Length: 183
Image (cartoon, rainbow, N blue to C red):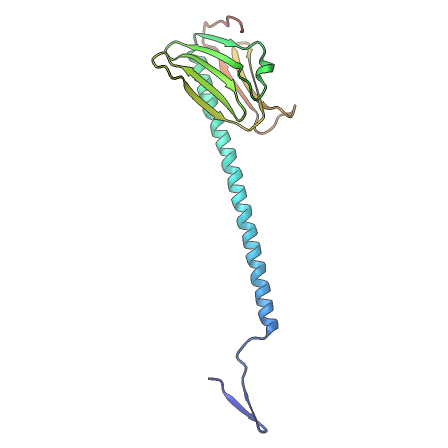
């Protein structure tokens, strides 16, 4: 209970509440803190999403590099498309490279809109095996022989300079394998 005080005929009660200005100050400070917290949370979520996207692209690139090198090492015949510049078109059906594997049959690498596709014609079944290695949209792909190496290069088609998502995979030709020419 509030204590009553007697002042010359008037009884006053000690005020225990808050004034309107105090309430406005507390509400303003609270709203500012909530706004800052929401902004930090939003920024953290955006950073996490972009980091996850970059890690997925890096993981896909590493899987592609490992599979490509494995395919080249096991190949008995390798054919690179002669018009690799046309194969650099981001939505093409022109294969970049064809590899003949002794057990697995023919493997074809082909560019797509948001992925580099690997098709394996399995001899034992009717359905070809298909793998899509997800890459940034707009990648231009080129395959070429560089001495004893096969180079698979993915570059963003809109620019001429190197970008963080550009991919350059080198695979050594198997000993004794001679390129028989391009298609």
